[in-house]
View 1 (tube, rainbow, N blue to C red):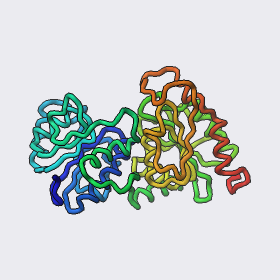
View 2: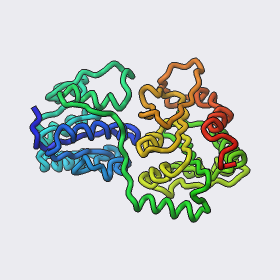
View 3: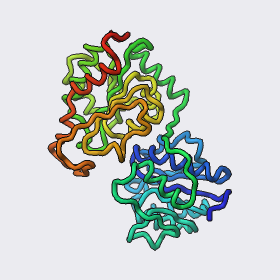
View 4: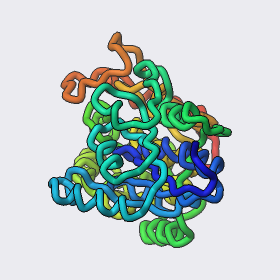
Length: 348
């Protein structure tokens, strides 16, 4: 039984979108234990997802493949956790290694999904739901609910500051973009290639947005997307604004909230957009299922996907066909935009 004022640890997952999905779990844990000290472990690349989260007292960085890659580094991390005297850990990650770390750190209560490899390390074993039967939000909430906690809601949270918003205002001003402009942000990247829409489609879409809607088009992305953004820009006839590598995740959230429209595939920024309450989102889905990793809620979101005969979700990371994404045409996107932003609107 978890007491009201215990020290609670959440060992989180590794991907931006999944960490965002976990914010519903974090909030519900806090609601169950308002007086407890709650920490959360994430890799450094996900730090900004949780930075400023009012439900957490502490964020701890664990980089399994970087600063904590070696055995000595992991033992030092164990020592760090041991010194923090946690009473309970909720393991959202299904890793054996992470569970072992918590056992070696002498955390008395270790709660997570049962697997054959790590079952003996858990003090409360939660039965794994059938594969792909739950949305990722519910997959994490299910752990705490089955552990006896009350779950009240299931929405995402992402926080950014006034400074982040001002940075974006200055960025837009420097790029001659004002409040009266039809601002469209395009996010062409993705953590694995099969989820990406073809580069040529992005170039054509951006040109048509500028020509047909007089839009100010901004291409967003991480520093790793800079080359992709340049290739898209170089294939265009018009000139978009490239923000790849210029904005951090907090500033990206601020930009998306200001944009009239955000277009993206199934990737972390999609869920940032949903969490900050973007005005309009068009989400392009191919190998992944909206029922599992789709945005929630769907209030301002349109999901575009095509049935090409493949089993969905598909986890063939090295698929060279990518026909599920290619099947979504530029015209499909333009038609949807025209419905949401009629030709006779203020942008024409």
